[in-house]
Amino acid sequence: MLRDELDKLIQAMIERGLTFDDAQKEFERQFISRALAKSNFNVCKAAKITGLHRNTLSRKMASYKIKKSA
Image (cartoon, rainbow, N blue to C red):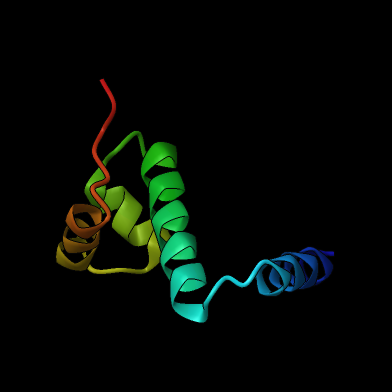
């Protein structure tokens, strides 16, 4: 099921001309954002969810300009 959904998403991205680099960045940004939302923006918990080191997650948050909304 998930594999089928992913296949359709990838096909749509290719048809729209999205580059691999742009697709990877968008996936990473959304994955991190959702992990942060699930952890109530607790960076340590979000790091465990994503499998990233806390410092790596913080650096990626800064690069994608992900901040806790007020």
